[in-house]
Image (cartoon, rainbow over all chains, first blue to last red; front, top):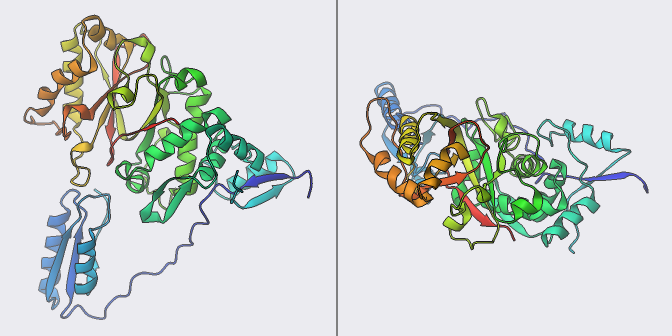
Length: 97
Length: 328
C-alpha cells in the first residue's frame, strides 16, 4: 500500500496475559518440608522463622529449608534452587521492605 | 545493512500512529515520533550499528536488547540520529549485570535511571551541563534519557502493573540526563576518573533510589562545604548488598557555588573524597544511616548546574553499580 506510513513495533514481544493461576496447594501440610525464602530485607528472616514456628505448632510439618538470597534483587543461587526443588513440599517467600 | 526484524504496522497518518501506540501501551504517556524504517535505519547508520547487534540482555526476563530495539525507541523518544551512539552506550551501561536492570526498574521504590554524559560529545550534541541541566528545555537531555526509559519499558518490559511495581514511581522516569560541566573547572571528568582516556566520550548510568539536595549557604571553605555534604550523606545512609559487594556508588553533583570553594583552594575530586571518607566511615550516631560504600572511589563527584543556589545534589543508589560505557 504505497504512500501509507509504516511504524515499527518497539517491543520485544507482547506481554503475557496474567494467567490468574496460583501454584498448586497441597491438601495438608502433614509431613511437609517447607522452604523459607528470605529476600534479606528488613526482618524477613525473623518473620519467616516466626511463621514457621506458628505453622509447626498447628500442622504436622516435618522440616524447613531456609534460604537467604545473596541479594534482595537477584534470584536464589543455583544450589539453593536445587535444595528447594528437590527437598521442599511447599515454599514461602515475600517481597517488599 | 541487515534487514530490520521488527513487525510493521501501517497507518494513514502520523496522528493515527501516535494514538495507536498509546492504545498499545508503547509510550510513556507522551506522544512519540513515528519510528519509520527509514528513520530507524538513519539512526543505526549514525552509530555504525547493525540492527541485530546485541546491546545487552535481562536474563531473568528472557529479553535480549538489540541495536534495532534501541534505535526504534530512540526515534520515538524524539532523538536526532547523531544521538544514537550515546543512546546505545546508555543502553549498554544499563544492561551491565551489576546495573541490575531487573531490580532497578521493577522495584517498589520506583528508582530512576540517571544518564551522565562526558567528553566532547556533550558539546557536539548540545547537552546541557550548567543552569537547569536536570530539567526540561534541552533536546539531548530530554530525549536521550527518554530513549533509555522507552527501551526499559518497551523492550525490557518494565510496564507499570506488570514488571514495574513502583509504589509511587517518579517523574525522573520520563527522562533524567545531563552532562558534566567539564569546562567549569579543572577537575578530572568522571569518565576519566573511571579509566577512560581524556578526550574520549562516555556515558555513566546510575540507578537513583532518591535524590537529596545538600544546601549550604554560609560555608566559604572546602572543609565547610564538605562537612555539610558529609552530614547529608550520613543522615540518609545507603543500602548495602552482598551481591553488589564493594562496588556500589553514590553520585554527588556539585554546583558551581560550592565547587568554586574547592577549586579555588586547589582541591581535586580525589582531595574531596579523601576528606569525606573518614567522616563517612565514623560510627553511626542516633538518627543516622550507614554509608555502605566499599572504598572512597565509590563516591562519584560530578560538576554540573548553574550559579545562584549554593547546593550540591546527592543521588543515592538503588541496588546497582553506576556503570560507565564509552560512546563508540
